Length: 314
Picture (cartoon, one colour):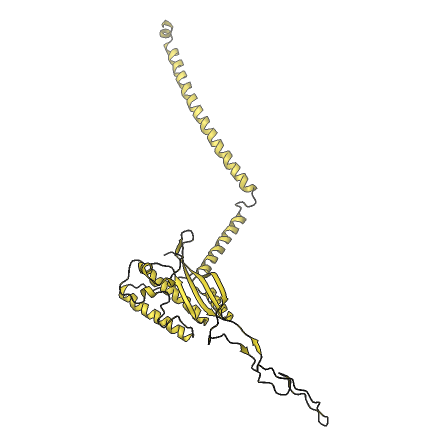
């Protein structure tokens, strides 16, 4: 104690030096820890960079330019695809306005069928809207789903009329309203439901079309769906020979237009004559007992087609 009193300045300086040494040690250890963490981050970044440069494709200016060009190409393709998935134009109508639009639409479809010589199931066929055909009040789910479906059925029917199918057997659609659920006309509806794809942002509505046609008319129908801008996709197609009935259009044979043969061979002309020389006699061939010759007999087809309409979610 006496020594401390005699060397007070020396003892205080040593104590201060000891405190400073402790503080310096603390800061040194903290700095070392931060340096080690920074070094680990640097090493990880270097490893990632080495991996990128060692890969087959790395972010060089050339590859970045290629990626930008591919992105623009993809945008162009998307814009082109949108041309083929335009939604069918639908009238935003309810109540009395919908009743007037419904009656006009169904009347227009019947008139188009008459012009295309397409036989309908009956004179007042409702094109799968029997439940809504004569209603004045409509239940839950009718708007805007029913006007949308009616517009899509109208577009589908126009493609069939362009192909001059005959007859139109039936059109079926998905149930969307309480009126559909309560309807006793089961032949108007499919078991399929309208689906919404959240990943692609699209709505898919199924329709089933059943009709009779010739193979050439079927090709016109398929070409019509292919060239349509409304996103019509044929998902399934079932074709079988249609049952032949008396007087059914297109069921008879295609006959040879050549008139009934005379004394010479069928389809031949008499040999040219030379003046002063006798013409050799040609023995006539016996005519067939059936008259004209059948070249082709094409049976009509019964076609059942499942078509999806694809449109963007609003």
